[in-house]
Image 1 (cartoon, rainbow, N blue to C red):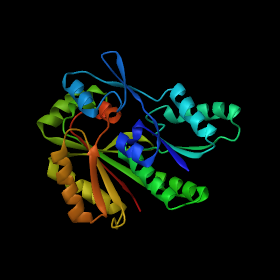
Image 2: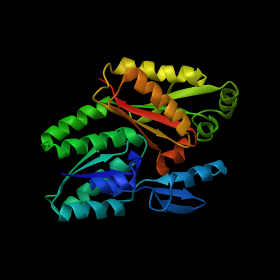
Image 3: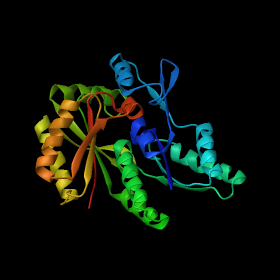
Length: 281
């Protein structure tokens, strides 16, 4: 069983290569130049562009890219699973379904199952790594299918940002709301609902925000001892480490793993974003 992943998962090239995943990189456009995610542009370069008042745009994996990867899988007669970036945030899932049917015209036995994870960043990445772990434990396809469908419903994302101006520039807030929020040290908490990023609540000051995160996680799962919680950040390791320490002391998970938000995702979140990913009960 082979896995296909895309840029929406925030997995690094080293993780992808170590696990032997097929990779569908997205494109990032800055100053009319299209760069291939991770191969030609880093998150540091994206964040530097944003600080210079540029607004990177992203492109999903192309039909040509998908056709090449899917054909390689078909020619090798491999059974494959593709855990795709949320269909509410990208057309990647829908395009993949179309390309799959086109490849099957040439390779009728092409065995690919595509899942809409309704997830982003390491919400999708966590699911991928957990599924790969089950593959390595010799789960059957039927067991994997049941596990994936259950976990898609249980994966949770919590996001917060340091500076509200980038959310405003992306249309998430008005400029007036962003100015007032920054002035009053307002910290928003957002999550992913039906695959879309939506606000939950706003808090005045970091400490209130941190404890709201812990309260929400405690309400959704009473036992994290067997779970690895993933965190990502965009140029704010200090905030991420503070939240990690609070999660470890309050929830006692198996582990808390921090990584950088990838180039594609940070093109939309901007600098100062911290995100937490876990499963509800």
